[in-house]
Length: 120
Image 1 (cartoon, rainbow, N blue to C red):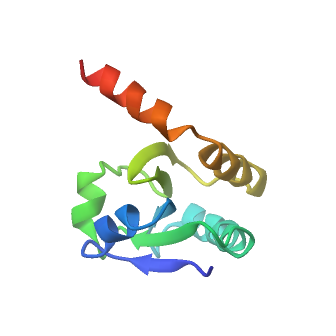
Image 2: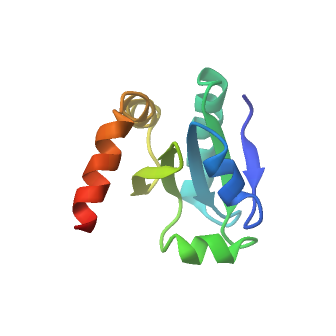
Image 3: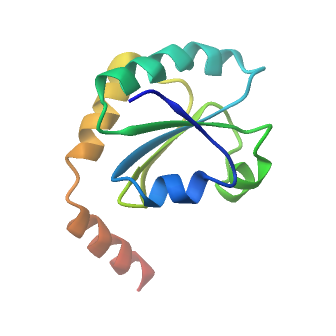
């Protein structure tokens, strides 16, 4: 699956309507974002079952602010609508592949139990 561009208006639907979504928060002026871009694109070609979404932080300040993105690139991974990974900085190909496999391997019943326990 090719990388998709998302916006403030499409972010929530993209995250909630798909099993696994990786979101790359980036900007056109950001050199590390430009370095990470091809790594992210390659991952999208290799992992067609995962939505790889890019969100331009300059064009979409609402979600960027709500997600408290203060450094770019920032990668967030969502599984079944739940934020399960967040990291600022450009990942190398091996690092991104490890994130993909870790997110795929999550026991979401346990993740939800852990989240519920944190609330109490």
